[in-house]
Length: 66
Image 1 (tube, rainbow, N blue to C red):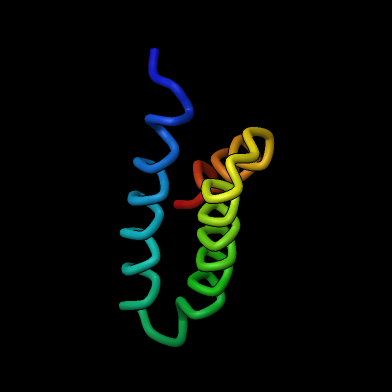
Image 2 (cartoon, rainbow, N blue to C red; image 1 turned 60 degrees about the horizontal axis):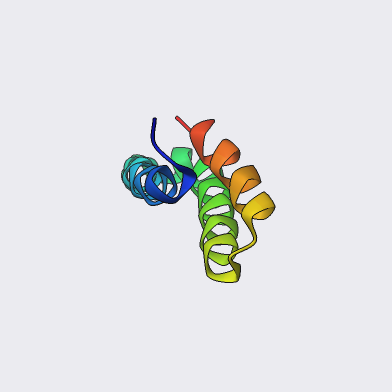
């Protein structure tokens, strides 16, 4: 079983790849890309703050992005 500390950056990287796909779509993907960027900013801030609860919430949000 892996830990949040191991899985969190992996999920951030995965979502950054998804963001790239949304940006490639062009205007049709703009709204999705904007929401993904917001989620990634929150995840980055949670990681920097070291707030475990905030990181867990951000992680769950990242996992929901497809």
